[in-house]
Image (tube, rainbow, N blue to C red; front, side, top):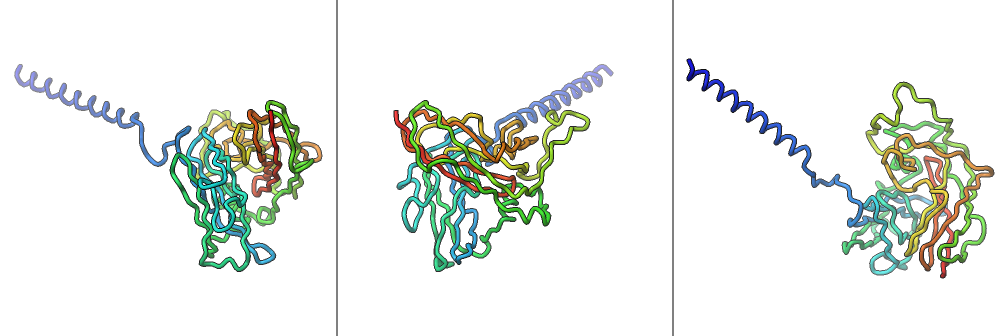
Length: 316
């Protein structure tokens, strides 16, 4: 009897040890860093140029539309026009950015090509960051044709596959920056800028509704796909330049920052700020070093965007 009890006790201890070992192994697997494609980085990763599609123009010409994916959450590389940042065929400089904001930036710029460009030809944007050349190939393949509804969908403005006649009738807001297209400034000296925006009032948005039950900020957001909040706003950002630019007040982000609490239309619970009187969005830009900068004011109604640029020559 004693021997049987001893054997039984030893078996129980062995089973318990195996169970604890299994739990420890499971915990180690769950807590171990995962080196997958979904891993995110703050710096050190490349920027990938992207061909978003092509558009038809009324005169028979076409627009190739480009964007990019910066794999970093913080690092914003500057890549001057030249061997590391060029578009072919044609001139190396065809309006592409030289400063790259974090993460996904869609429908950033357009390159117009003539109506006889040809469906068998390519336009190639070559961008080298972190020593890694990446290329985006633009063609007039029919399956790459995009219209406004495609832009709305790709940016997440339509949610998961929804639209309406009102939404489809939306026109992009218009934007113009007051004053001359080229200005001068000094390092550390704020430059006052005002973007004037007009819009057709679509989409119609109302004041945020009061939350029911728990505070929504304490609930994890559920988003089956990238989702963008609607509402007219302006995003100021540096399009070209070698230094850093700070804006006051802090602008709404033009890149897809999906983190809760971010000042971004892609962030959960974000609400567009009130439209200022006469649609005039004012900011002050301050530069940390000399150089030539191009700043962009992007007017966005949540569905479609328009851009205006200003060049600032900064000296000491």
